[in-house]
Structures are given as C-alpha cells and as structure tokens.
Length: 166
Image (cartoon, rainbow, N blue to C red; front, top):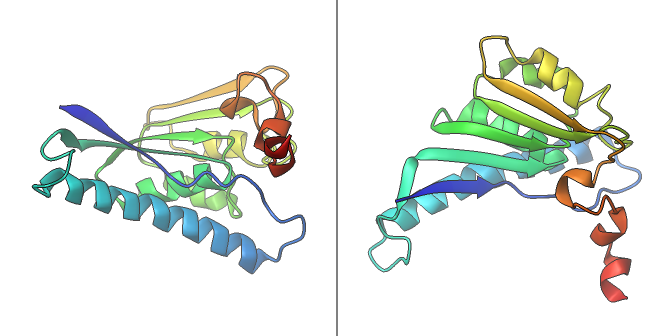
C-alpha cells in the first residue's frame, strides 16, 4: 500500500491590494480544498473502478501547502484529526493566533528573506505558537525567499505567468 499524501491548493499569485475579507476567502478556500481532497481520495480508495482501489493507506494522511496553502494545511489538520502530519511551505495565516491550535506534527520550511510571508510575522510565530508537546521542526533556507521552498533555483520568475510565456 502506498501512503496517501495530499497537497492543498498552492496559491501561485496573490492580489496586490486585497481586503481582509478577500484574504479570509482565499484561506477558507485553501482549507476547504485540503479537506475536500481528503474526502475525495478516501472515496477513490473504495470505488471499485478506481485505479487507486484499496491501494491507499487512508490512515496515513498528510497535508501540505505553500503560502496561504501552508496556512490552510495547518487549519485543515486542526479540523480533521485523521491528518497525521503537516508540511507548511512558507506558510501564511491572516490571524497568527490560529496556530495555537496546532496539535499535529508539522514541518515548517521557509526562506530567510521571505518578504511575502515574513518569518517574523508568520513561520517563526507559527512554530513558536505550536505547543512544545507537538513534534515540530523549522527549517529556514539561508538567503532564501518566498519561492525557495518550491524551487531549487530560488527564482520567483519561475512562478509568474510572464515567465511561462517566454
């Protein structure tokens, strides 16, 4: 059996100017995406015509996400106790206090010079807010930015629509 690993939505771009309600809607979408993905993959494990039929270990579910998706992955694990671990890549949450409820083992990856989900306001805070009795690890890439955790090239141009057109 293989282990079922799910990725929450990786939001590639954020609007430059957005209200708090817009950010909350993005984060809610990321959270719901993770939870819906878990339900869908579990159903595929029991659907007779599925190529995944009885091949998934649905008791070993992990969620991951980048940026707001990393925040959504943390929130998903707080709501679904079947999630066994979280991988939060340059995570972003509007409300830092949401990370006080982390009770699932979590790996945080971030870039030292992340100017989108600043470690000072996001990753380091989430790590410190996660209780000491929860397995957790923070890995910060020296010289890295918001995109480093997604690319070995540390190049945000790889994630823009302009670069794809070239």
